[in-house]
Length: 361
Image 1 (cartoon, rainbow, N blue to C red):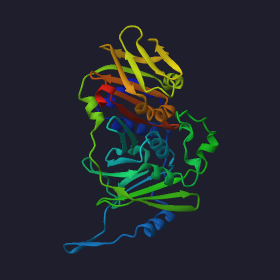
Image 2 (image 1 turned 135 degrees about the horizontal axis):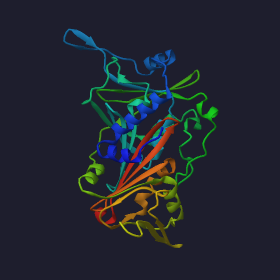
Image 3 (image 1 turned 90 degrees about the vertical axis):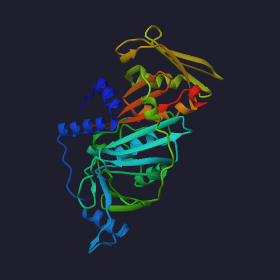
Image 4 (image 1 turned 135 degrees about the vertical axis):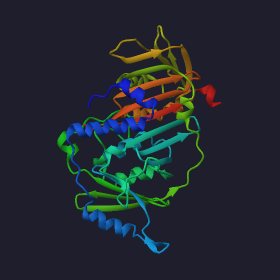
């Protein structure tokens, strides 16, 4: 599927999750994808065993507890996106009409959001077969590292071809798997979560083997939406580039560097990334060439420093992505949006927002 990066920028400004869902729906329609209807019988029986439903009385009627239910033909997209933001133990999970969003943050300085649009799921509903309303939302915290371990309980085959190798600290993309291997015996998933709150239940099926996992969830802790803070101030620089060019810059930066300087200007050097460490200084300039910078807009020159330790979490998402959007607002807050291909016809986005050193102090 061809994705217009300019459209991605516009959609990001108006709600990226809606754009991701729209793009995936278009891709699915274009590929003629057909999902099997309903949940396999062994899934249903395991669900009853793992979480027996108890009726409670309301007035003169007995009502079953209402659960949110979603299922995926393959857990690979889920695993890929979790790995892109797994720099913290816990993350905020929000289930809404548009899909599922995970938010992770560190030191109120870096914040990441990963999106699983509704179009990725073959089921996305309440347990009484009614859809989520546009104003309905479930929110809780969950241990995403434990969640990732549960999703890969059958081994590494769930990892999608575009995801990074687990032992690569810079998130370098793994070599694409052969088409036959990538499509062979995907591990499917059904997840459920009570509307009233409780445990997150995962049912994973690999062939005839089904495993149930119950994960504890936690009440949300106070959080500042750095993405909203970024959007509150005018954006002075917008750049879209192939991720490979950016990977080269980070590969040349000394790991001992304490901070990174990002310079963006309407004139030369246009885009400059520089850092200094024990091994010396590194500086990389990008020309205003459409082969390098697919889109470039800068109204005011800027030069901002960011803690390298706060940029490190972005590297895994960068390694998985094909395109990167870089935006800076007037007070130096940096937004990096990574386009990640989850499968041949499915894409999603991971957003990182990083505060400059001056704003962090």
